[in-house]
Image (cartoon, rainbow, N blue to C red; front, top):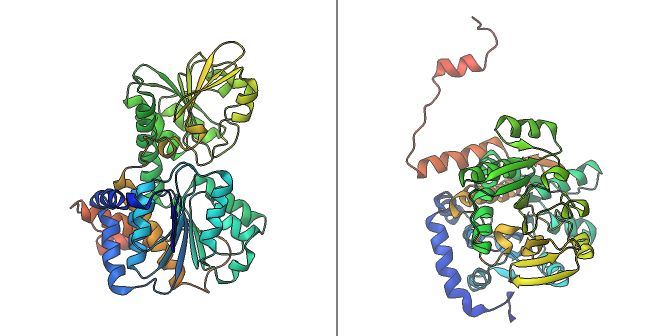
Length: 423
């Protein structure tokens, strides 16, 4: 491990490689570069510190560079023990960010690194899973006094924030970046599906066509995954607990059934629910020999690995990313990436495409600015991203693609804002 004044990373000599990969990501993230150009001129974040717990990837590096250009001090750690790209962590350290992250952190190291970020006393936090802001509320309460806001970009994290608000435990304004239209309609729907299938293919090198895939959860992530899987020639089955989402899956042309039935048919299982023990003890025993299990939700709780460990008569590591479990019935189950976020936790997974992250991280950058501009005016509750930010991100994306849209005439604006004119 390499340590310096502003970093603790695996190998600082990887910085050159990380810099090149970040520059490649920037070529696919034009919206964020436009925001950076304005930030560099206006310095709206000058004098403020942003604490981040995100996947330390080349796309995240583009966001960090943008915040630094806006004048912010940035301290960052990972939000998953296996998702940090070590060359990117090294590059960010060389560029002036405070970086405490490396791939393969232990649970103890993971929480120590969260604390190191919080030692910088952030004015705004950006979370992927809500661990940073939860730690502030439970173990670092002294930081709440100066905390202007907390931004969260995952379904899992938003669930936690809303639970905090419901319990009266939320002591700072929070922003639900996950549900910005320019985030969940593209990042969740397109990014998760493409990157998850890509990671599964790279890790296993199996033929997807003709395989039955069980997708647990039919939100934006799960629905996108089921659609992309069908496009790859797979046979998707959907499991759900929400009747409306289940009905949507049916009308989208998918088989829908409980996991206790789907377990018998699946060749590949992917969980995207944000909940725990979605695949549990009783399901393992029903599965085919050779079933492959992957999780695309944020935390590694969706597949009940503790029960799988207890059931198994043998456990064998196939490679860095695949663990084989042999059950008493002699059937084998293969788990990818320790049940962690498959698109980032596998050694071959790179996460979402840079282009889709351009929109997500543009929301994050503008939300940080929003918290600073509106300090003292926000309540301690979970807000949705303001419509003007969402629309600005969409407008910038269209502009970068050279696409024009229609504009309402004054007559049309009047018509849709009035109740007086009928047939």
